Image: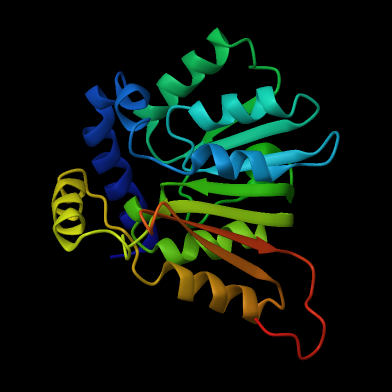
Length: 226
């Protein structure tokens, strides 16, 4: 299957999954998409800076981030047209349409300049999207290519310090929504950071329920541990 075909197929799947769920998504997900607000609090874009979210969904994170950093401009892309309908409505209701720009695109391969007339952003973040994206490793690469600052990732971990029964139950339930926690997320983020000569900070949250990774853009000193 070619990349365009994969993108179209995944777009249709996401529209199907969220056609009705998008109306209650934020209300239901607030209880188990943990670590999102911590990630937003660590973005700290420079005054007048730019921030891009990959897989922006309902726009919930963009709205919170825009309120937290009133001097920055925000951008978001999502493969689901249905989710973007909800996001645009929420952003307009919040009165932030002049500071948040949205576009429909595949997070694994997008042209930021064509979409937003920008080549790069001070911050890029991905919140609970990698676990739903086929070829999610390409999203990390695309995010790194799109930032001149840092890439921030939060997603499901492997619940490594939680009871085994909880992990099994959670994974079976998530599978109903085409969500697969990425067991190799930490290794892949570290590998891509290392190959790019960048620093990677990885933090398990809530006994491994969620994982937070930040890939900085500055080069490490020669011989520094990675």
